[in-house]
Figure 1 (tube, rainbow, N blue to C red):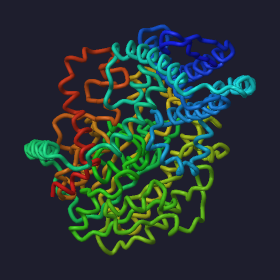
Figure 2: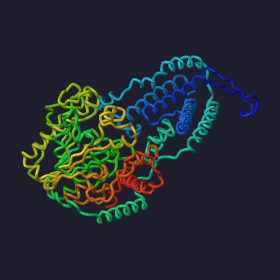
Figure 3: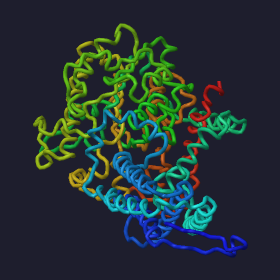
Figure 4: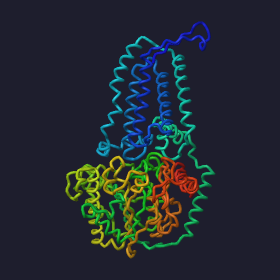
Length: 630
């Protein structure tokens, strides 16, 4: 947009003559409309917003999106005198960011944040997973670029000899910003802000505003906030844990100390979802070995995935520490120097050796540093394995079979030990199993879902062989064995065949019920039992602590074997209980059995009580509070 403002002998605000360049106006409008279109397209393409297009929520979201675009135009006008190619470059950068948002959203069901971008250098090994998420319609993020390139070239020629004074550019920008603030005020007045759910912010205020909000929050939390633990925060933590442990002391002590002195073997299985357990395809069990183990173990069939930006590392974090994942990014990166109460540290007091075992590079997810904070004595990584068999994750992951076999050759089994296995063969996108005929998936052959089933069938077979090895070594009857999935393996964008296979709809309640992982605890002498109490991965440590007889005072999870009421809190603020599901994304409460919408007022107090655990966890992480409470 080319605007010349000339003084005519008097006050600049009363004697101003505008000379408008129609082409410049069209150019700026095209830029703003492109940004708005691509942002709104992302939100509908990836099911953050829904039809009808002109619903109240969508209209106000559009106002907010336009506000962001106008502010962007205003800033570009201020900082570029001749406006040659800056609009064009900004358009490309925004297109790349929005495509990255879309890909990240399809896998993690949330939008990219600053901490995630900071950790992007670790995405190389999952390149194939990323490529599988692209869609043909993604071309729309870049469809305007050729047109914009031509317009930018023409405009640069038209403005080659012109130079607009800074004051005049600032006046134009100020007008645009005033219009933008007015437009945003309309949207803001009709919505409230969710403290936990990024998708809720995007849905109501647009993707552009979310990134502004995220940058502001990141700066505030990392550079502007006081990192000292305030006295009121300290008192809040003390009061919370005193009350929590008092209530725990009033519960029954079922299975207390039953595994004291036994070895602890924990297996975190890559992408293992709950639905495969006891399921059949074409008459064959998908996971026959796990099914057999389930019948001989305590099996928890209502365990929800609680991971956030750290994905696999978040599952490790919750399982070993029983705190919630970081609000943004991964705790493994952001809080690797904190003080924690962990399984490894507590068992160390009892004379145990502890091992973390993962057949990948030690720096991935910052495990080298984080495992020190967790208290593992030994970290066995890809540097310590002979890469003699590749199965899964594109064909270059050490097979689970070889992983288990070599690990048991390294662990000193003559002394009490805690071994924490993190598997790899079942990693997204499962393309390794595309042409493998190890399991008959019928019509799902060579589909994403079919490949996933084959991957989990292999992971199950490897577990079966590992269990037999433990028996042969005389360890099976002297060990507490815990097996659970780290996160879901089928994002909603790639779950069409899954829903068909299970006969489910895409409703919020049906989908959230699929966001579960299996959890089994096998203890010699304990008969098999199914526990259907609602819980999450954060509850693993308290149950292990109860059965092995060690302290877990600062654990935020609960012992599902003895608790009076089950629930699971997700990192985005959603809450699940046996009776209802509070979805933070649309701020709605659903009946877990019927899917009907319930009156939120009837559950609000309980929901807020459960959500308080997120705040407590955040204080502990961000203020390194456990170091200061001791």
